Length: 187
Image 1: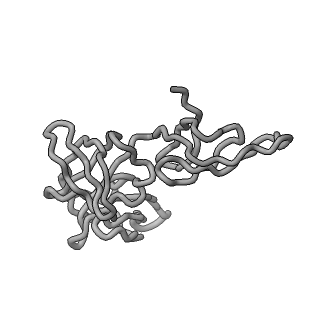
Image 2 (image 1 turned 90 degrees about the vertical axis):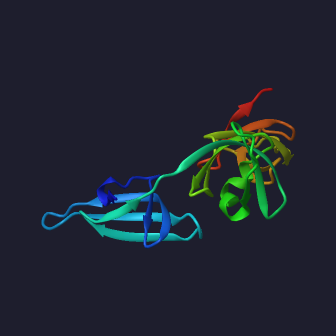
Image 3 (image 1 turned 45 degrees about the vertical axis):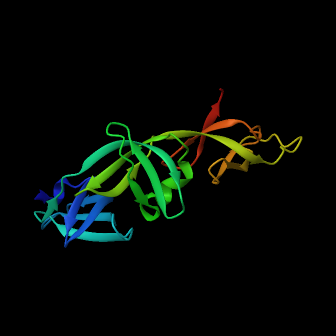
């Protein structure tokens, strides 16, 4: 069991038979009375978000998770296939678990899969990925005010706001946590 005061962003716990990962955490201590802990958490099996307030001293069940470094291979629409870099096993992960990360997955990208009782429940991407721009409109001549951006499409199909000087065929670095352009990457 783990005290709710020990919950922090990224901590996984079990509550009423559901597995949750903390997305946001606030500790509130009023002048009188007990402290309250407000948690925003994602159900790792269903993907729903829960906002719950706990009284200080309440306990939730701590869980043991296994982490595996894997390499992304391909997807068939319903499942994403990875290869464990140590055992060479190839787990098939349902698309609903990968959903938000899918736009950053390229062939052979190494990611970390989280398992609970041999069931894949979460995927952790690297902090940034390098992707090739496949579609970019030309920059307008004379449009040189500071902060001019345009939308481009990258090889995985997502759209990213980039500076006007980025052209088709260039490789750019994108933050996986914010989805924002970081820099140009030279080969």
